[in-house]
Every structure is written in structure tokens, then in C-alpha cells.
Amino acid sequence: MPLALPNFRRRRVLYVVLSSAVLTLFWLFYSRSDATPDEHTDSHRREWPVRVRPHAKPPPSPPTTTGLPSSQSPSLSVYDPPPINAEFSANSTGNLNRRANATLLMLTRNVDMWDALTSVRALEDRFNRRHHYPWVFLNDEEFSEEFMRRARALLPESAVSFGLIPKEHWNQPDWIDVARQNAAMKTMQSRNVKYGGNLAYHNMCRFNSGFFFRHPLLDEYKWYWRVEPRVKFHCDIFDDPFVYLEENDKVYGYTMSVHEIPATIPTLWKTVQDFMENYPQYMLPKEDNLMRFISNDNGRTYNRCHFWSNFEIASLDFWRSEAYTTFFEYLDKTGGFYYERWGDAPVHTLALALFLPRHKIHLFDEIGYQHDDWSHCPRDESVWRRGRCLCDARDGFDYTSDSCRRRWDALI
Ligand SMILES: *[C@@H]1O[C@H](CO)[C@@H](O)[C@H](O)[C@H]1NC(C)=O
Ligand SMILES: *[C@@H]1O[C@H](CO)[C@@H](O)[C@H](O)[C@H]1NC(C)=O
Image 1: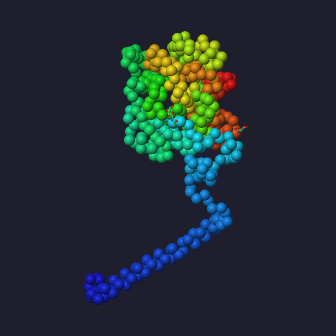
Image 2: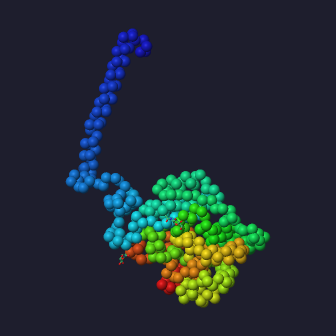
Image 3: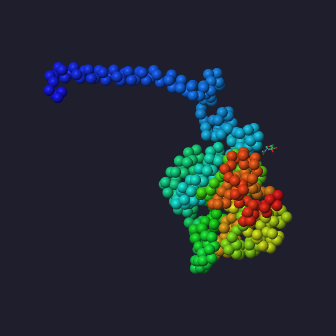
């Protein structure tokens, strides 16, 4: 139809349409920018009158602190809750300017990526977002690109490194009799010895006993916190456990202690007794060491108590020491990591108990922690409140019959 109009009429119609469009746009633009600020502020004032206080002190300019003087809290971010009360601040070793020579350490696999990240997220939220300790991830195969990308994304403010475990630290040594090992593993499997038939598990126990501290990525640290995939941290951790251990001249910190499964360690104690006879120079006198924690009969038998090593905060120098490396090699040469299923937890514990005085070992009671179904939750109400814990001590593992907590308490 419009095509049928004469030329001049077509132009006039176009003019009218265009100019009214421009006017409409103008009107829309100005009426908006005029009305918006007042209208919005007004409605805010009506809803939340107390929030607008013209004479109140202006908020701290950069939104990166919680109102504490920024010189005192360089690593606090906007997400940090302010201290609850004075007692809490006063007791916090959390002098945030002081950082130990320490790393958070996780041995994991690519297939466990989400479980690994769950633990990372949990420890960051409850502790490390205030400290930014570096993370070291170790794997017996190359980390996948996705694992590294996601881990780095969760840890934008921490140094993160990914290490490959050398084959000679992971696979069984060539002097292991593979036929004997296979037969032993088969027997353990048929007897339902937990992980007895799982070769990777044997490798892992041996690695965690004798090799993790030799990985080059750990050379630059003095302390480590071992974190496993899929663990929980129930409470805020305000005091820096590394700094605590260092300042109090301690070597090793743990949360739960457990009885080992007897079928995994038939000859372990006999081997350790042989070692004690051959290397008396490394032993502390029974009165000073933790023999009473690991034996109910003054060293005749091992009561199977051990610190549960999936959680450890400890000095790398202890494992690097001549005493421990000699101990590990002595045990390793018997093949017990393959012909039986020696765990790194009893191996660590026996060395700690025999070489160190009791006061070098610390129970981190305030660190609520969960591995699988086993949970440690602070029983003391004030500790629970201070840590804003999310756990029920009545469901805790500590005072069950599998736990060695009562024995530890008795030593104090
Ligand atoms: C806080 O520290 C003071 C002094 O070191 C101590 O007396 C007090 O018991 C501590 N309070 C708590 C809840 O740990
Ligand atoms: C941390 O400890 C390692 C191992 O003892 C040491 O080589 C390194 O120099 C230390 N780093 C710092 C900053 O003290």
C-alpha cells in the first residue's frame, strides 16, 4: 500500500515517524535518570530507616577488611567474621602476621577430584582463608588439566603445586617376591582384611610411611598438614596449629587415635622389637617415651593403638631424621608392606612413641574432624561454641571401644 503513495507524501510520513521516535527516546531517557535516584533512595529509607545515618562514621574505605586496622590483618578478607569477643582474640595464637614454614598436603588421584576439592573447600573455609598456606597435591600419575584448573580456582590466593610421585617411591621395590606378595594379597582378600587385596593401597601405605617427606616439593617446608579427600572440618580453626606446635616445641599433632586391625600387622611388633634391640641408640627410656600408649604390658605386646594418620600436623624433620629413616628402612626390608598390610598410621605411631617424649605430641582437641563415619567433635561446650562447630560430640568416636582416647587421657 505505502508504495502506492506519491513521493512527497511518503517522505512526510517518514519524517513524522522518525521525529516522534526520537522524541519518545529522549523522553524515556530523561524521565528515568531524573526519577531513579530519589525514588529508590526514598523506598530504601522507608524500608530500612536505620541504615542511613548521615552523621555516622563513614565505612572503612576498601571493602577488604572487617573494620580491624588493616595493618593488623593483612590477610583478612571481606568474608571473615569479626572476632566474637575479647577473650577469643586474646587467646588466638592467630597472630596473622606470623606464618609457619608449612604446607597443606594432599595425596590424591584424578578420579577423586570432587572428594579432594571438598576437603580443600572445607579447610579453606574453616582455616586457611585467613592464612593462605600453600597447598601441595601429590599423585602417582600426572594430574589432569581439569583437576589443576579446578583446584587453582578454589585457591586464588594460595600457592598451589602439583607433584608426580616418582615410580621408585610408589611401586614395590624389585626385591619384593611378587609371587609371595600376590599369594599374601589373595589370602588377605579371602579373609576380608580391609584393603588387603588392593595393591595401590599397599603402595600408598608404604609411600606415606617412608617417602612422602622425600618428595622434592616438600623440601622447602618444615611442617605439613596432611589432608585427605572427603574429610570434614567441623569447627572454625582460629589458632594456627603450625605456629602452636612450633612455639610449644612439639613435633606431631593428631585428632583421633584408633586400634589397628590385627590381621594387617601380624609381625609388625616383632619387627619393631628387633629394631629396638639392634638400634638402642634411637630409643628413649621407657619412662620418658610413649610406651604406655602403645603397650599395655610394658612393651611385651603392641596394643594396636595408633594416631589416625589421615589427619596429621607434624614436623617433616622428624621423618627426615636418621632415626626414622633407619627405622623405616628396617621395616621395609622385611616386606611387611606387601606380605602383610602394614599401615602408615601404626608405623608412624610406633616411631613417634618410641623416639619422642610425650610432651612432643599434641592432641588437637579443638579441631573438629571427620573421616568416613568417624568423627572427632570437641566435648567442651566453650570450645564448641568458640569454634562454631557443626557436630555432635555424643556421636563422636573418641570414647568408643575402637578408640584409644581413654588411654591417651590417662597419660596426661
Ligand atoms: C585465654 O588465655 C588466658 C591467658 O593466657 C587464660 O587464662 C584463659 O584461660 C584462656 N581462655 C580460654 C577460653 O582459653
Ligand atoms: C623452610 O624449611 C625448609 C626445610 O627446612 C628450608 O629449606 C627453608 O629455607 C625454610 N624456608 C624459610 C622461608 O624459612
